[in-house]
Length: 496
Image (cartoon, rainbow, N blue to C red; front, side, top):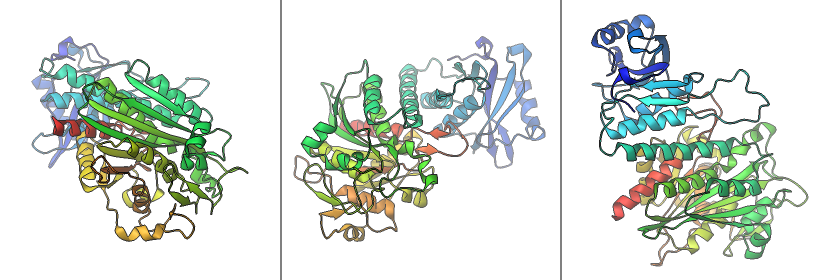
């Protein structure tokens, strides 16, 4: 952090360019006035548009010891106003595209503590690289090691705390990305549980792991039904953070299918390629809880990681089998590739028994989510109040969520002649049908009413199959972590 460009030692200096109504606009920056004016007049000639994700390198300014000047596009701007998310994305894009350099200074326009924190968060997210299983790193550019933010807010009150929060959030997102990126040969229910313990080291959290014997004994029929076709047995991991002065009690439930072949209802080969990401919900709620613990927020928070590998074998659940979910409800399995809702049902019942003030579940649940909302916008369904709160938290965090309804007419399509309900129903609006199924397993609170709940379907946004953009890399994105943490913060702000 610095207020004076002359005191910064960096290989590259990043300044912002926006897209104004009449062309590119050089945003506020620490360059000398003469150099800034000349650069602003040259943007068109340089072919710089200011579009988001645009990063252009030009020779630096010798007098300031900067070898390379980098023009980072922030997208559309009006009256030189720029949102926190635009800053977050511009910083992340620049740091991601400047891999190979060791030191970078970011001089994007910041006039508030929140804007500085957004730049820091974006930079940390953009620097992420997966420590892959390649036998050599030859030809690979190393991530930027040191980032200095140049801002007039360097001495502002509250900045250290805001930067600490940004660091914690980015670390949690990056840890989630790494879990999602791990191949199923390395990450399966048992090793996922081990990874949770490792990530939680040094934090005031308690982890309880239910193995296949305990799951069978206690009647977790959904998780056992999905996981029994694999040689790698399922797990239910309970992660608890319970500070002494907790003001509210919340629960998180995450889908953790470490690989989804579809089971007996096997997927086409092309549909299986990315199915290592089907545990992204469990990874997100785990790391969101650990972030809350690191921030020391006064909330009792419990995360339930529903872990199984969905494989076809002679022991696998068959279409037409009936499973008994934890708590006693029965489900006819019409399609073994609709397995996520089965493990989530167990987790939702278990979470409900502790009667939290609200439940959020996060899952890569349906391909229908992508049909409805695309690959970058997640769906949120459930109680109107909780869904609206999640949307507000997502907006604040910089993630894209959109509320969807739970139409009453979808419930009859889940009726079964042999069980309480079937695991698939109406195909049209399948994302909402899946949420209607999950709603059947939300229990009652202390006042006898149904516990407030929202379901976050992150099927598309959890895994980026395209090119990297902004602070988002290829493969695992870590989506929902920041939204869940922001939701917890918002709940606390309303109870204080």
